[in-house]
Length: 284
Ligand code: NDP
Image 1 (tube, rainbow, N blue to C red):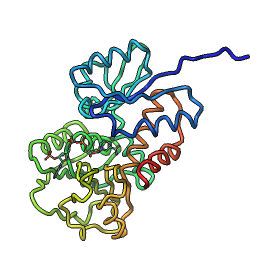
Image 2: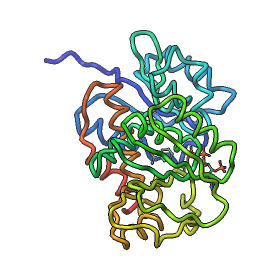
Image 3: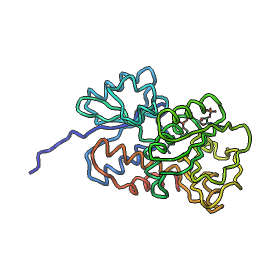
Image 4: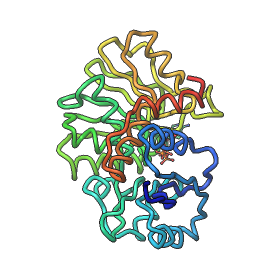
């Protein structure tokens, strides 16, 4: 007879708000599918309690956890170290226990690149990315580290946009430039990859559209949207109608989850199980 073991391994997420975050559904689907006695607990943590929550997770032996809005930068001061790309990006979304230490990693951009590689290798490609916030930082740094040759950052606020461009030029091998977003943007013909990393189109503002000349898209481009709710955004539908290959926000979300679970458990989980769990939630 097997020795009974009632002690599950704990992981989870700290965010505020937390109720709308679907990550728990996809991660627990993977744990079940692979027969892991692991749990993922969605926690609503107010900013003033973040340090207590991190110390609590450490005291309870958690294997790690995700951080989402508004904790991705603030959590760093409570950690014992950072992985190399999290160090460059300056934000963390996945914390991993290594020995007694909690180390911060950033899987947002890694998940995006992993999903993108199923369509095209970023090496040598020319990228146009809309947005310069946390998601855009993570995605553009990882694309640069994956060999993208040129990145044009399109952003409405000059300061945030310039900060990202300076980061890419100073700390990665790519060349980057800022295009201020103060009117309709036409995508240059030699662009290989177009990415929406703004919050435009996120539920409930599903009718909000990028100020972008859709007729400048052409079939040689890959068009990606970081928005996962709804997965089929106006941008994704418009790009498909013009013959572009597309990558929706579920691809990024699923792959960052796959990488996070690999960090925690050492196991390569089945991404399709996680994608199906999300598709059933978003009726995709
Ligand atoms: P931030 O708040 O850090 O950045 C938002 C960005 O969007 C800024 O560059 C902002 O420009 C721009 N923006 C917002 N509204 C407008 C507008 N009306 N017109 C022009 N620009 C606008 O958010 P994050 O980067 O953390 O997240 C962005 C999106 O990425 C979220 O919707 C999130 O759902 C998605 N995301 C998806 C993930 C996935 O796994 N699929 C993972 C992480 C994020 P400005 O600087 O001028 O304010």
